[in-house]
Length: 250
Ligand SMILES: NC(=O)c1ccc[n+]([C@@H]2O[C@H](COP(=O)([O-])OP(=O)(O)OC[C@H]3O[C@@H](n4cnc5c(N)ncnc54)[C@H](O)[C@@H]3O)[C@@H](O)[C@H]2O)c1
Image (cartoon, rainbow, N blue to C red; front, side):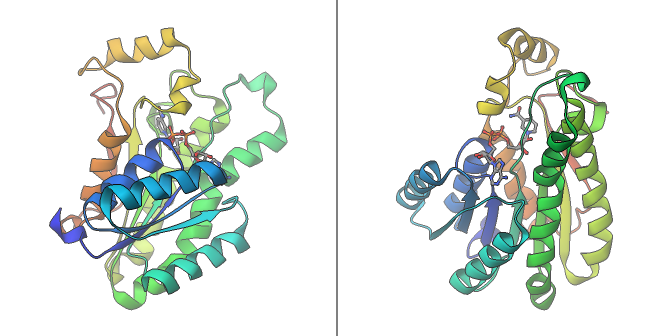
């Protein structure tokens, strides 16, 4: 995806896991990346790793993405540092594994705040600049659970990931005439800390049910992000791309 060269991107929840994989893949293709996460120390190590591996500029932000003021000031910092934000990847997410009986109202709100509302904060902050430049790529990481309810997913998590799908379909219509596309990716089980919290038996069930007989990797998702972020994907919007080894064939 040569058209990515010279772009700049914000990737949320990018200290580790899929977010880190996405930031690295974009940086390897000539994108300056702004990474943010609550895990300050890990974030700085990741930033250094990306700089050394790719030679690209990296801006870091250690903050909680549910804080709208912190989001606004980070977006301003990135716009000042890189001159623009071409790509926003709403990747950060949390998945407390528990049955409905154990979910408290406060935790329900937290899951929706991180998995859905923070994406609204980021989108609202980056869209004015994207509209002026007539170009933008917004990509939100949903989940297979957002489509089929999941196999091990908690109720609040699956519901929040379903909300992400409606979020992209609505937002895409509001910004499409200004050259901004909005898409979701629905990963199956990907080998990260999040899937590490699921039992090995459940992960094996996913593998058995997949066509590829494997879990996915952060890179598998990152390559899909690179395509959706490219100029070549200008006619793809309001779409949900499955990256799941063929587990959910809908
Ligand atoms: N791993 C999977 O199997 C899988 C499958 C489908 C979808 N997903 C989704 O992919 C995304 C990435 O997940 P992952 O597997 O890399 O998980 P992960 O737990 O390894 O990474 C998530 C990152 O988000 C950060 N984060 C969480 N809350 C935050 C907050 N309030 N502010 C700032 N940062 C915050 C965490 O610190 C962490 O670094 C998530 O949205 C997840 O729901 C994961």
